[in-house]
Length: 158
Image 1 (cartoon, helix red, strand yellow):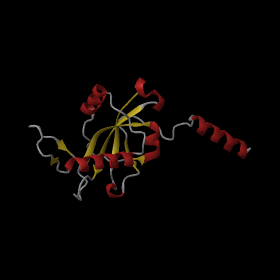
Image 2 (cartoon, helix red, strand yellow):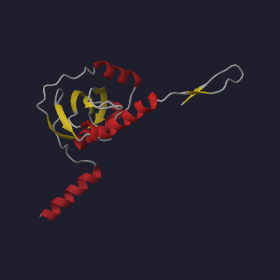
Image 3 (tube, helix red, strand yellow):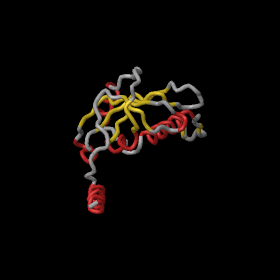
C-alpha cells in the first residue's frame, strides 16, 4: 500500500497536480527563507487575483517584502513595495505565519502599475527574487561612461 501511495504522489507531481502546501489569504504576514543578510525579513500578501495571461501559474500573489538589505547599510530598512509571485514560488519560500504587527507599505500603486505595464510574475523563490532586485539596483548605482562625441552626438552606455 505505501508503494501505491508513493507512485500516486509521483504521478501527481509529474502532472503538476500537487495540492498547494499552504493556505494563503490577503493580509497574511509570512516568514520566509531569506537571503543570509535578510534574517527577520517578512512578506505580506496584499492581493490575490487570477490573471488570464498567467493562468498556468494559478492565482497571482501580490506581496510586499520588508526588512531586506540593499547596498552596504547594516540596518534592514529597505523594502520591495510590490512583487507578484506564483503560488509555487510562495509555497517554496514561506516557512510560517508571523505574529508580527509591523507596518507594511501599501502596494496598490505598484499593483496598478503592474497591470498597466502588463508586468511579469516571479516563479522563483522569494529570496532569489530579492537577490535579483538587489543586483539590478547595484547595477543602477554604477556610474555610466560617456563615449567620445561623434558627429555631434553623445551616447551613454553602462
